[in-house]
Image (cartoon, rainbow, N blue to C red; front, side, top):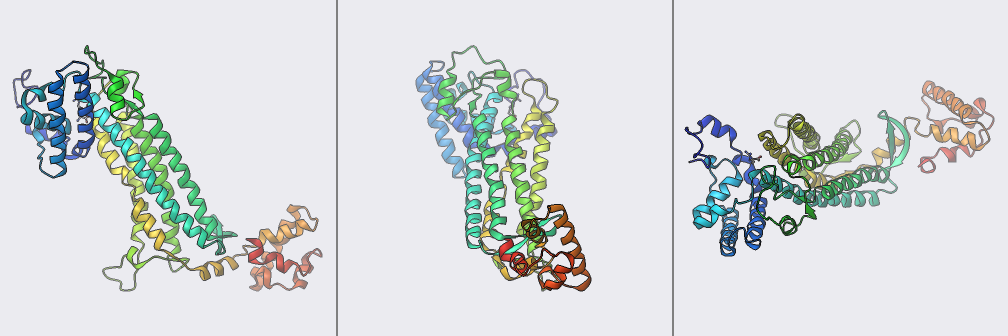
Length: 427
Ligand code: ARG
């Protein structure tokens, strides 16, 4: 029998029951839901809204339910729709009368709002810790490759020589910003919506500061209508994760290119690669590809939630329930497997260096050489352009031209030009 059977003349249609039910995914919130209910029950007892001994019975019952869920001993039912009603029903089944008092001065609207916030509040530090682990791998790779010369690119054309360490630290900087974005989201979500009720609070003398403190929030939220309809923090999380995934995806793309035969700058560890079912020679970068692919899904989750929220009138609407699958899917950002893949990757320094020696990567340094001899940069740039053009015709590189070739184009060139063009000097 439904909670609301008193008002209804008919049973819920099975189609509606299945469609409306969220227990299939929101069961993931059981810990947060029980924590929220314990804080609420304790507050009800302390303020005298319910008897202290009833509050105690509720809290003991909820703790036992938590232990049993963790041990796999509680079955949730579709009939009870969502995690909130499943746990309340289980509590009442176990402790009777007292269980029926838990929902005093509360609605599922503030209940799910607090569950979702608690979930995001717990996930963010976990994600930050994973980003920090990745940062450690990047530092390690950078430290080991301070002298590993490789081409730097613009337009994916060899541009100027750099080092693998420089490259790694570029990504380290991106992830550092990601951490600050996540921390920023955490700061703003740190308010507790419990007590907002369905939308307009209640007539009971609830102590919202007590529940906020018990759940580890800095303070209660200010406006009850906003409290139950706000999912900004989830959108902020998905935005921060979308940017983080964009960084991971760019990195993945480079790794995929680098381990192709066309580049062969890196070799992935066998344990972090996959083979082909038909082509015996293949060694594929599936991990990087899956991360790149997952990025699309995380963007999708952000757009899902923005779109779900975009035309909702105040306050709670059932549409909001669709936030949960988007959040659950997005928080798994593949960081541990990515970090492990990077950690075990080996750098093919010789190939990088060889690539850095081609493509006229020292042309800018050649122009700078002339500038140091007093020529305006624009003129130096034009002269080196002519030299490159000459090299392309003769199959030379700048450092294989003779001094006579150099001097035929500008008298400012001297024997020290070779030193200026050396990769080491350029880097
Ligand atoms: N399962 C619901 C959700 O996640 C709980 C809130 C239901 N509220 C309601 N007014 N029907 O949004």
